[in-house]
Length: 360
Length: 148
Image (cartoon, rainbow over all chains, first blue to last red; front, side, top):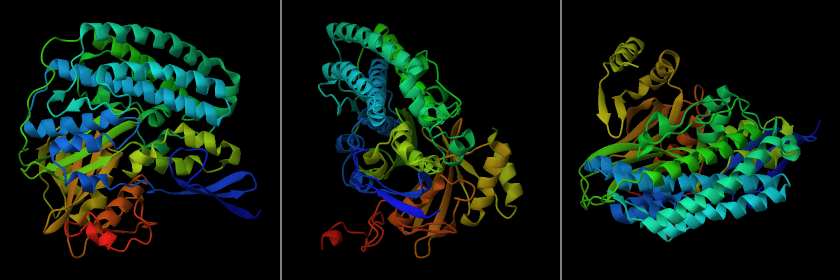
């Protein structure tokens, strides 16, 4: 059969960010998929070498427009390790609280995008409406809905009043009621299952070969989560389950993410119930002693890695950032092989891409 | 995984070299290896110690030489450090054993001018195909050149 090459992107209705796919199809079957990225490359790694450690907080927060807080968390814990600085327990707990609220909002945003791409607009509306509750909590605590500017080297910049904590708890209850309904939809709704089950399946072996991370890897049965396996911030003080599935298809990835939202809600509640008193940050010196550090954290999409090298001045000599979307993009080239063209949007949605993150 | 077992296995695989490890915060073990041994070392990590996950490759310009850090993860971080000469930076690709290394190697290749020998498609990852002013993460690269 004649092969046809279909260019998709860089500007296209499927994703709000630019990414170019080149699909080679035989009839309705995709045989090969190649991709081209870099359309939103901003040179953040190079820029970070020209700013001091404090200015970099605000630069690195903008690596990602969804999971901004986890980037500053990874960066701060790296710099704090170089400074041998202990963050007060209250600061660590609040840092973790924002990490989990961010995971809730990221997963719910993603569920909406998936639902829209499979033509299930109702769930898109519900999911994005309910996600506002998580954003409201973050706005109340930090003043920002997406870029929170909460982290600082040595701790956090927020110290919530008891009234704010009460309000956050109240909102979490309302959110949990809504998320319970969404879990039922994912579990029982036939429309969603027909469009996602058996679509874009990745095997454990494929996940391993492409070094994929986060919910995509856990959906294929890779039981790895840095929050449990290499606890940072206050995760060693929280009880939670690492959710895994086995099929690796889009439905399994959906199931993992909605259950992770429930786990995150439980973690937020544990933090609010057990928030230690005291300082929220330690004062950090301007200059960082010579040294190198590798800092890792579990973002909503999986492992984020920061390598930071200091030459003893007030500016880093090198910052390397690896975001979880990069290995996912490597894997998706295989997931797109031998599927129907109509399933391409579903498979691409299933991995929860953040292109700006991957391009940096 | 015992570190001394790992070092002994590496010495068995590359008998001409002795390997030493040092710690790096937050929880990372760094092992310096010669570029020629990279493939053998990665093979040992994978086959003997089940270390499959390559988190990323950091490339950096250290003035007199280039430095590649292969960050692996298995229960804790394991980083392989490879030093390359600045004027002829080449190292073998890992894409055969680890297809996920494809993007990481292309990025290091375009940003620092490192050649990954045997890479199946070494085109640019992030930079435009017609990028002309040389690898942008080398220290001598001036940002103004691009505007000129």
